[in-house]
Structure formats: C-alpha cells, structure tokens
Amino acid sequence: MRDSVIELQTAANGFARVTTFTFWQRIRLGLLLMFRYGFWRWGIWIPPITDDAIYPEFNRGKKRIFAGWDNWFGYDLIATDPDSDLFLRSFYEKHCRKGRSAS
Image (spheres, rainbow, N blue to C red):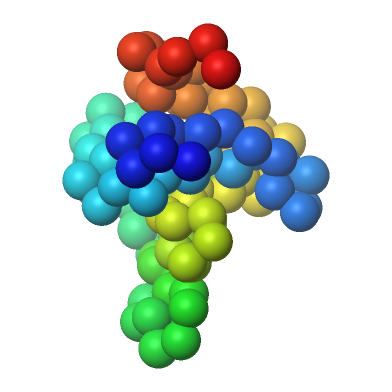
C-alpha cells in the first residue's frame, strides 16, 4: 500500500474497512464524518503502546464505525453492522475513490 492511497477492504468481522497510512488523510476522513455527516466521537482512546491504538468510535443514530491504527494496516475505519457497512462503502466511493489508479 502506498502512503497516499485510501483502500476499501473487508475486515475480519465481514464489514467494510477503510484504511490509509497517511495521518492527514485520517484527519480529513474524520472531519468529513463529523461535519458533513453528523457523526460524533464516543469511547476510549488507547495510545499506541505497542503496535496498535484505539480511537473513539464514530456514532450517528444506530450507525457505529470503529477507528484505530496498527502498524500493518495504518489508520482504519471499520463498520460494525450492515447499516454502517453500507454507509462506509458509499462514503468511500464518494470521498476516497477519486484519483485512484486502476490497479
């Protein structure tokens, strides 16, 4: 994965996972979720003591999106249910897919 690329994958829970290694892309995605889509942050923050970190999740109504970082996938947003999966996939198509190479 290149540093500037944002990828859509399927996480171990079977739902969408959006990942990037770029700190500024993570900030941009978080700001979009909060200010354009009305999500708010809730939960604990666990700093990266070893090779991963947990950030407060994004919540809006019944939609929940986990946020975190690890040294293998970088910064990630992970859907927790079918509604947030559908939202995160459409969010990726609208805000992250532009400018991607075909590979």
